[in-house]
Image 1 (tube, rainbow, N blue to C red):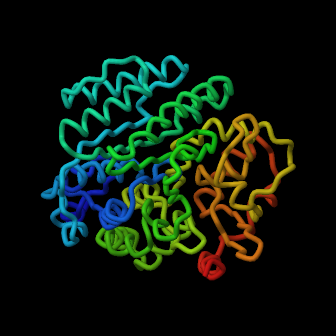
Image 2 (cartoon, one colour):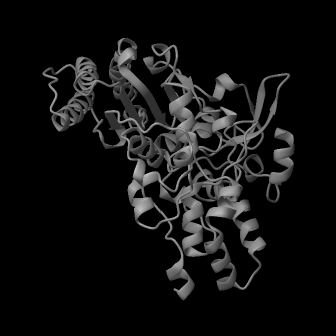
Length: 406
């Protein structure tokens, strides 16, 4: 490592605590303006994004802001805003840490999480009904602190997607979540904010039917860069690391930027919004200094592999798929999930263009990392699909794609 390396801020690979990032001298791509807008302009939100796109870090950021931790954000965008820094009690549930292999296990683990939060605040929730427990927890916190309560839920859909190999368990878990989230309908006056994340949108969970005022930000152009890094954030936030890598490899910085863009940019979460880089792969690229399939190699979801294995070969096309929004934005039948919906929601396909007159998206692989790794390591092994059905010769011109969006 060079002397310059020692003077640079560290790369926040895998970190999910905003205090650790800011206080530990890591690079922080400031997303607090988004947080301010969400808190001030609305109340109930949902957003779906692929794994390792920064959902947990942003929820932790919201948590610290809502708790009134003003000092932590003194150098961030929200510090220069009109935010009042009132303290709110926060209920933060991360479903990736809640056991879900059996419906009874999910109920028990969720009950335990609620009891831990209640004990921390010294409020009673004496019940073994998780729906009643959530209701009592929010009401008791609101009463104790004379304040509305913020509820932050990460990876709400994990009890479903972890069990798609066993549809009976997946459906039973879905029904548990449906009842659990149904509690929110009667709690609105006690809630300052709810922010819920996941990978997929399962329309049969009453999260989406019970919350008539739940704002789905998944394809909202204003929040297209909420997760992931925009090109401007890359060039500004990681300029020292890019310059250092340029010197190590004895090549122009523009060559480094072009390589990063080709491998890790290209995720369009709105047909109007800017594309973003995969944050996990970008950080690892800057750390290791050469392009690899970092995000892809962390593990393709087993439910996606299982679905591909069921497909007749070679009966489907991936590059250039056409789809209406309803086909890719929601999943209603766990026993008959559309492959293109699952691939878009998990980040293996992205918006390439949108025809406003027909209301049809064209989907494609976002970048070199996903395109190459998907074919090389998964398609040949499980589906033996012809390369012609997967890839287009050469690398997709991201500029031309963006023009089609504009």
